[in-house]
Image (cartoon, rainbow, N blue to C red; front, side, top):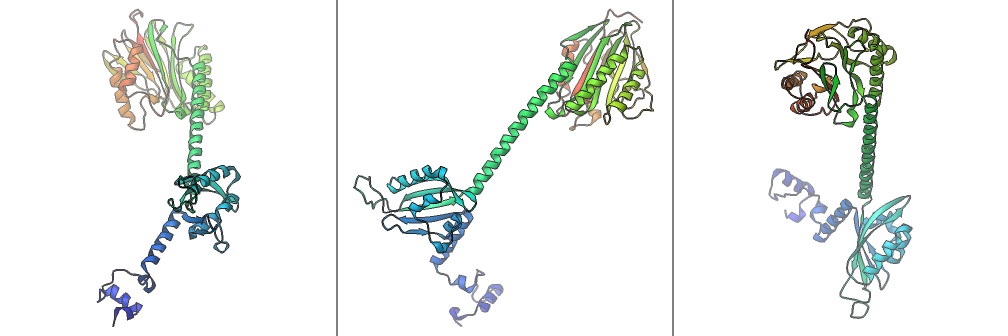
Length: 430
């Protein structure tokens, strides 16, 4: 049986069994007998569909036009209506873009070489973006004088629908604009929050000058705008000669946390004038958090330092205990019991008493100093203890800066307060 007379079924059997024909292409009989010109035309048509691209030719002498199939798709035109003439293109172009079309046609028709432009056409109820490249059909066969000032006999054009690309670019541009606006709003909000914090909680420069003590304070804002929180401190002498020392942290971030921080801190300053103990003050702040700051919790450590006896009497509400640095050794103080402010109303806040000696240093801090997503809290506390041990005998203000550098700098996710208290040599002996 000759190859030309074999049935399609026999050919498929040969393909699957590796028979006499050893055919390597599983095509239909029609595809197998397609002429090279037909295959090339099919591939070109497929490439035009993939690129949403068509071609056209316009004969300037006869006015005849020839379009590829994809041109009708791009213009949304029925092939039965035939192609659009070169002079009729203006009727399809958006009026605002007619100047671009005119410039393109003048350049191409006068035979000056290839020219390209981008303009919009209206296809039904939508605008489509087209990129058009026109060139003289035969640059060596001009109808004008030999100096090149005349027109060519025709124009060849390639047209691509780039609506999807332009739409994606507009979406990206709008996204970038919105991102910039969001960053500007975030920067403005951060500026407002920092200004509000400074108004409520001025950041001291250098060391505070309090009786028989040297005190250095740092408020370290989070690196991320959205993480600016409600950390606060207080260090002030009282009428009875003692010094109130306190740090705290309100849950949450942003303006609500700062507003709640202001209420707790201002309440503490007023309640301190009653002479109540640290445990009693925390109990009152807890009542305030439960009944006036619904849904808010806070941590705090506060105490009274009696410079005449060098006794620090303190209590805590969920916060880590202060660190005592003595003779170059740093350790956390034993923690009295005390739950978060705003958590429950039936748990007492125990008092603790710490006898200090000349040269001792206390470091009070909020959890933003030791807690980070990238490391365990115990690892963070170990770093702080090691850095705190080096504070003895150095300037406290510069020492806190070095401590922050030694533990890795500011916390990206949370702000922190540090309050360092050193017993001066002129403090009375107990």
